[in-house]
Length: 100
Image (cartoon, rainbow, N blue to C red; front, side, top):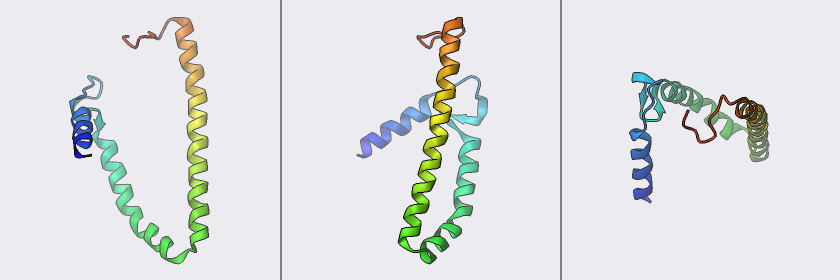
């Protein structure tokens, strides 16, 4: 298991994008890591409070609702992105092999 984690971490750190510049560590966009970390740390007290005060059934339903919203958002983005990609392929603006 540790070998897989080590390989994944090396893979993330080895990637590089010219467009990202100095704000990336491989494929990892550092400002996003910072903002996500700060938001997670700030939300911990609220999550702990809700976990202790709400009944288990409410927590399960709230999590199910959160998952449904995330799935709906991803599905919309997928559908919008699929139409954008297919139109770019038809117009020749996107290389199907990913080289351009």
